Amino acid sequence: YTGKTGNELLTEQIKKIRVYEYQHVPIVVKESVSVYDAISTMFLEDVGTLFVVDDQSCLTGVLSRKDLLRASIGKQDLNALPVHIIMTRMPNITVCQKDDLLVEVAQNLISKQIDGIPVVKKTKSGLEVVGRVTKTTITKAFVELVMEDHI
Ligand code: ADP
Image (tube, rainbow, N blue to C red; front, side):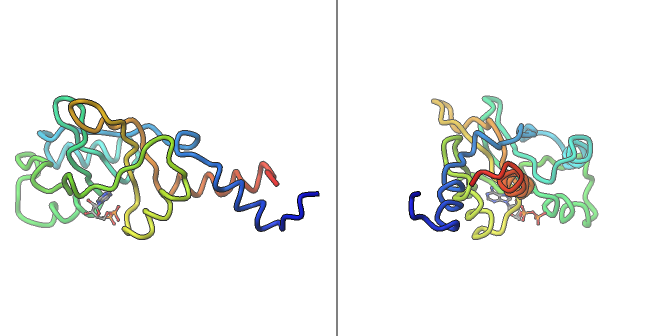
């Protein structure tokens, strides 16, 4: 018997979970695609956050549902408006890496008030997008932790 309380054991289990165990496939679009096509991609891929990349597949921006909604309520032609005009851009993007603790990414989702964070890998040309962690990812991990009866 370790003498640890149930709470301490649970905390220990949670702090073992790394991003790579739960990350999802990232859905990305190029900077030059139109807002119209980004909206189509969001529906087709059934995601709430798109990551924007340059020709080297490196992260340059993020598009949320509300970014696209905001762009859609004006009188602009959504087919002629490229996403790089409206996206949130680097270096103001919160990112994580595959070996980060999932709980730290969850804390970032809450403190930054965002729905998703790209998982990136540093390369010579920039940050390559290799995955995504969203509020759904955290919910899934939370449920699995209970279901698997880890402790
Ligand atoms: P929504 O805007 O649909 O409520 P979010 O809360 O995720 O969705 O996004 C809020 C704002 O934060 C948006 O302008 C979005 O571009 C930006 N954003 C989303 N994800 C990130 C991120 N990982 N890093 C920085 N900004 C982000």
